[in-house]
Structure formats: C-alpha cells, structure tokens
Length: 549
Image (cartoon, rainbow, N blue to C red; front, side, top):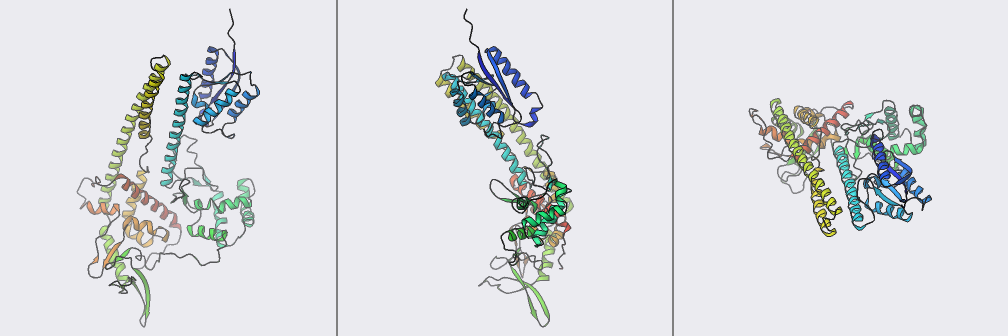
C-alpha cells in the first residue's frame, strides 16, 4: 500500500478589531483550521495570529503578522504547500490584493486553502474563489460606507467623530462599542493652559513658535503632558488644530466647515488674528464686521419699493444726532427717505410679539414633531427588518446554487447566470439596508432647542452676538421682511417654528399638521436651532449689551 504524501503548511488567523482579541474568535479559527489540516493530512509548520487588524490593505503597520507569514513561505520555498485560512475574507478584503498575494504564494509552491469554502485550482473552484473575493471586497466597501455615513451624521450634528486634538479628553465611545453621541470634554489640566497660550499669540504677546512653546511649559504644560513643548507642536496648535479650538469642525472629505457643539477654546476673531499673524498680516486693519449693533435690522428689513435690504446711518444737525434706516439703491423711489431707528425697532418688536408662539402652541409643535419623528423611525426600522430577512433568504439561495454547481447539477454558464442574478438582488437589498436615516440627530435635544428659541425670541433678537446673527435670522426670517411706511411690515416667509405657530391657531387642535412638510426640512431646521442654542450658550460668558429701543 502506497502511503499518501503529507503536505506541510501554515495557518493564518485574523480578527478585525481589538475588541475581538479577548474573545474566542482567534481560538475558534485556529481550532477549525487545525481540524481541516488533520482531515487533509496537512502538517502545520507555523501559526500566525493577527490580533485586531484590518484586511482592507496590506501595509506593514496594518498586517505585520500577515507579511511575516508571506516571508515565512518565501524562506521555506519548496517545503510548504498550503496556506490555510478559515474564510477567504480572512485572507484579504480587496480583490486585487487577494489575487496578487495568491500569485506570490503560487510562485513559492503554496496554495491557498479555505476551511469553509470550496476553492482551489480547478476552473469551477477558481470561479467560486473569485466570487468570494469579490463578495469580501463588496462587504468591506459597504462597511466603509456605513462608517462614513455615520461619521458624516456626527459632523452634521456638530460632533467631531475622530480622536480630538490635545486639550480635550477622548470619550472612548468606540472602545465601549457605542456611537459617539456627544462632544469630547475639555481636559481640566491642559485646556486652560493651551487657551491662555493661543490667546497670548492672538494678541501679539508672544510672536514666535519657540517663544510660545517655552511660555506654555512655564505655565505648566510640560508638567501636565510629561514632556516639553516644541515649535513643531506649537505649529500644529496654531495650524490644523486651530479651527477645532475655535468651535469649527471641518469635513475631511469636502472641506466644508460646520459649527461644533464642543466647548470652544478661542473665539473666531481670535482664530482670524492667529492666522493673520502667521501670514504676517497682524498689523493690517481689523476685518470688517457686517453686523452693526446700533442697526441690527440692516440685513433683515427690505425696501418696499425695490426689495433690497435697507442700510442705515447717523446724521448730525443743530439738534444733535439722528439714527435712520434708508434705501441706498440708485433710482429707487424710496432712496434716501429715512425711517427713524426707534420707530422701526419699536414696530419690529411689536411684530415679533405677534409671531412668537404661545407656550401652548410650542407644546403642540413639540408633541407633533416627536410623533412624526417616531412614526418615521418605526417605518424605517420595519423596512430595514424586511430587507434583512430578504437578504438572509438571498444568501441562502446563493449558497444552494454554489452547492448545485459543486455537485454538477449546474453547468458553469448556468451557475454564472444564476449567481449573477442573485448578486444583483443582494446588492439592491444591501443598498436599502445601509441607507441611513436622513441627517440623524438627537431629536429630544433639538426639539428643546427649538422650544427655547420660540420662548426667548425677543430677548435673543436683542442680545444675540454678531457671530450668531445670521443663523438666528435664518431661523426666524430666512428671506427678510419688507417694511412699508404706510402699511408697516408686510407678510413674510417665516422660519418653520413660527410658521407652525401661526398655523396652530388658538391651540385647541390636538396637534399641528406636519403632513405637507418634508422630514428633511424639519430635521435641518431643528439642527440649526440646536447649533444656535450651543453657540449662544458658549458665548454667554462674554459681554453682551442689550440694544436700547
């Protein structure tokens, strides 16, 4: 009797995250691979365990043990015949990498073996391997898209989804397996030191990177960090991290800026001063601020004749100084016909009191928004569950087709046709499943911010700082309002909250009708209200002088 020749090979196991390392995944993979080797009479020469690394690329930093396994195969060329993994997606999750590495292994005389999948060097087995490698790449792309969508949702909420820069304490949501639902808190020791340093640089008290690094250490940064600050460290503070410190989140994919809801370390004016000093522009005139606290309606009230926004100014005469709003458009019928500031402010305050929702109206609006949001979430969850069940059925059908190809029931041509049809259906189901809720937000917090806006309308108009004026005005009067000398303020397009308040009547209706308003529009408005609430809360500590009317 001729004894069957024994093959020699290696086992490679991998888990995708650090959280799995402590579990049974690696141990289970190794156990199943060992049993496979016993069944196939493969002598195990070495085992390589990749703990908590991704297969999305083959960089040395990402998959050290995998590259070590390839080097092991190279050194023992001619002595090894098998590279054993539990599944193809443990080997690589990119089709190009999969076949590139597979070719390298074949050059060493080593064949890839999958414990759970029928792959090999026969035409049908190669085809199955190609499909499995493509499915692994597709699954990786879907996971990446889900991750990107989640991070974009956090950015749209004003939350930085990545590790925060120095001065803030990472909340470690990912390590706990949770989604990031709130911004990172300031570091009690580092935050005030860095804040002091950035403000000193903005004011010109420290003018060089070396000087600021030295001063930060004098103020206690070296002791708190355990190492001295360097000019390179300071350059990062003043450069790429400075926008975050000013309460700005920059979308890394588009470069779009959004207000963050974390505690800002410096103001936007201080950010501009820092950037100007770095560019050698510190001695130039201070940038123009379009908001004039003496004339807060300058970009809100429109001329009744030409429709352009009114401008304003102060005229002096024998009797003293007089403040007026007027239209500066050449050829306009109302050009230079002034409206006394006190008269327009008084009329505007009366108009705002008319549109401000009553407490009962606000309560109706809040309840209606919650009801619509919950209904939409329930519908989305049900649709997702239906698609998950559909996907499970399709995956089972696909496996049956593969089994029928393996036992010869299907020809190669018919197999490709059937698998192609199923894969297209799987793709459609996957796209529906991974479609996120549009601009997911913390609806409870957002609705409370809108309620706060409606309850404090008059006070906010008087006291909102310049940096928040545009957002506030867009929430109340997104297109401005026209004033006629004879008829007063005309009908204007109101922000959603105040439009709903005017439609709710005396408040005897059980709810406010939101059926004709797209949910994305409601979501966007609530998000803006939440951002305004956050901005004003952050600015509360600064001086803000109410306007005199």
